[in-house]
Image (cartoon, rainbow, N blue to C red):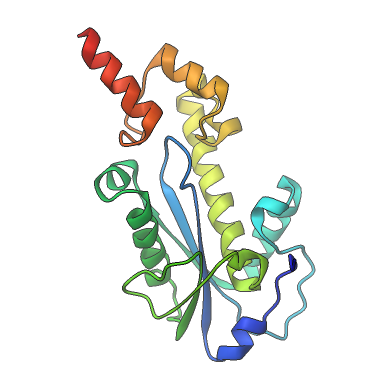
Length: 206
């Protein structure tokens, strides 16, 4: 299975191509973040590892983030926990992707979007496991993950009891125990099972 992305999909279309990906569908709290990345050239020397962000170490991601932000056209978009609850996570992810592309200083002619669905207001195609195939999508996956991780790290300074800087909001055992002990706050997604259950229990005891 191919795991090292390249520019073959970008070259097949030509023109100004944006890779688009998101991070943060699974966590119980925090925003979902999308990123869009345009490489100024497909004939470019890339001195860092760029691949699916989940296959990279934290050090590799940090180096890649630094290089991508200095050498490409990029932007991020977000949907808040309240928007996730209102729209559901799928449509919130689509909206975050539209916002990321809309924030680009250069407008792409075509988008390569990780997953199996194209947001309704974007022109492009979906690419299943796109972060293992397209360098533009892989770069977007790194920007999205690093951006979201920083948001959760900063929030963890205000709410240290939840260890968001370590679990990024995912439902780890210790995170679920912290929710049980300390309850929830405005950063939680109230439509997600464990959070919904906690609200239900609190209501029952009122």
